[in-house]
Length: 113
Length: 114
Image 1 (cartoon, rainbow over the protein chains, first blue to last red):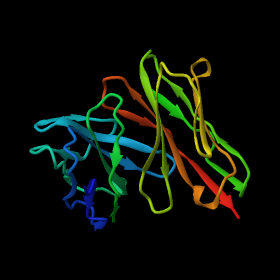
Image 2: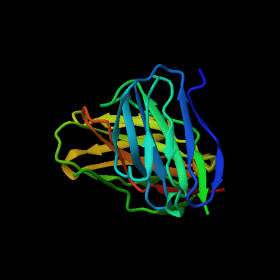
Image 3: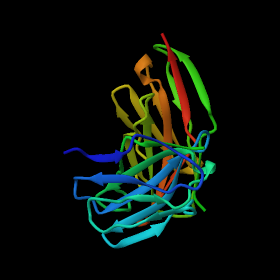
């Protein structure tokens, strides 16, 4: 199993550009989520999904869109990038919500100029 | 509201010293789960332990041990005989039962010097 994979590893955007961060898992996990990590703030939940076709907002959803058309994939879309979205983005998955341990991808480092 | 506080921003120790990383949480729920994750310099997040709110037994895994005390809402992590490879950022996290949201602390950066 490849586990949780994320692409790209690093991306530079200009303000106003849009892009999609890709996340895929091959563990047949129902639950997937996106976090951003900023210095001194730990990880904050952006959006999550409890299964294909179901998504919900986390703590900091503004400026981001998600969809879940398959169990395996959970892309994160930045609609109009802003410098405040400069961060490291982590995707995670687990068998379910509740007490299940989340497994994290390697992260995508995003710089918005 | 759920909140996790890791008051120690950064700790430096010399190899072979013991070190304790503090984690204090806030929740009104009676059922919840607590986690510790390690983030080495390479950047990935590595799961270390999960604990539910009904199990206050301390846990030991090799040089790692965890002390969960509901009375003080704390879930502290001790590394015995630290090694340079333990250098990393360590995150404590809280999850509500049957909810799908993790609440992470801000992390403690541990520097272990040879």
